Length: 153
Image (cartoon, rainbow, N blue to C red; front, side, top):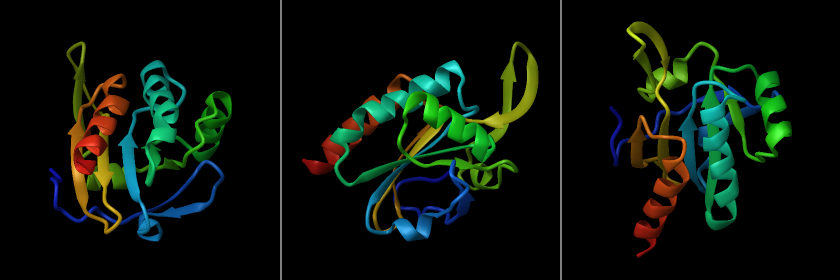
C-alpha cells in the first residue's frame, strides 16, 4: 500500500475531453486524486459532487477522478453534474492497480474484481501526503478538508 512520503506513481490517461492528462505535468500544484467505481452512480455522484462543492476552499489543490469508465461516459457525467475537474479513464485498471485501488471485493457472498473507493493527496513535488482507502462518498470531502487544514496549521 502507498503511504505518506512515497513517490506517487506517474501516469498518463485520457480525460473526459479525450485529452492526455499527465501527473508529471501537474508539479506546480497539489492533487486530490480519487478513485471511484462507476460514473453517474449514486455513491460516485455523491462523492464527486461533494468534492466539486468544496473546490473553492481547496486553494492550490486540483481535484482529479479516475475510474474504468470511457471518456465519453465521464464527459456525460461531468456535463450532467457540472463537476468541472478532470475525470480520467483507466479502462484496463493499470493505474488503479499501481495505486492499490483495484482488487478483490465481496458483495452478497460474490467475489469480483473492482475499484476500492479511495483518495490520495499528492504534494506539488509528487509525494503522497495522505491516503484514505475504502473511504465513503460522504466522508471524502470532509477528510480532504481536515487534512488540508491540519497541513496549514
